[in-house]
Image (cartoon, rainbow, N blue to C red; front, side, top):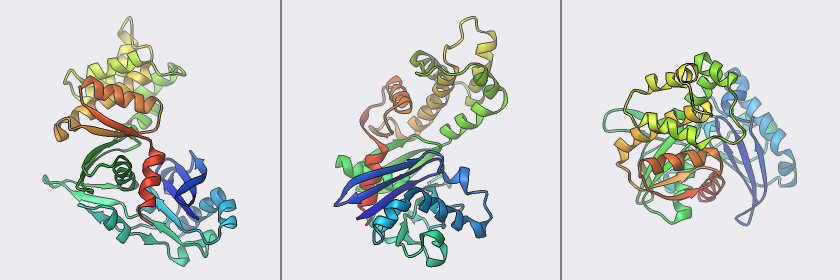
Length: 312
């Protein structure tokens, strides 16, 4: 028996595993590290993480006291339960496994006497001198490629911080990050864009035509910062503005993200790692608008489960 956990900046998801199969699942949308624990004083942070972990999974822990726990995600970052050292690209399962971090007894607190391992995350240095980091996406991208039987792959992983991961010969060789999700979340709640979106709530089902209008604006080649203002000005001045301003906003952001990544990856066939829903649908529409081929889609549960299973 084992426990796998994907614990990121926004969400907490866990699997109780027996014989390689998930026999129970648990999730907490409000369990993200940034929202709940990053503001805690450093000396109290590990205690807060441990308390939340036990609160969410206490019945599993009691029923299976010997089950080891394997975790990936922002929980291993600088403001996480413990900070783990990054694996450096090129990195495959062997490198990530070698760098698994076992939480020391003094950091376990409420989770005392439990063997808990956190994946390392991954860092890369680009040829132009830029640095980048991922946590959980190293496990998910390698897991998705393994699930599909691919030694070489380009993964697009939408999220708060959207990641694009290159795998060659079974190892992560590089990646890029776009703040698409974070920009959407922040501007939807603040400033002029936030005000116009709150005054015009999104419909229950996002409007594809409004999203496509945002993609079309991004395709015109203007700057992202000037395009974003159109979310507000279109509503104020256009006699027939987009019906769904939130979808229009998403279209602008995703359109610009895809066009930037097109420069890096030259429309190499991609694997989209996203759960079913509007986010996956939006990215698929974005890829189609550029005639950028998508080899396959993989849900995040399959990717993280396969990836963590390969680390034990």
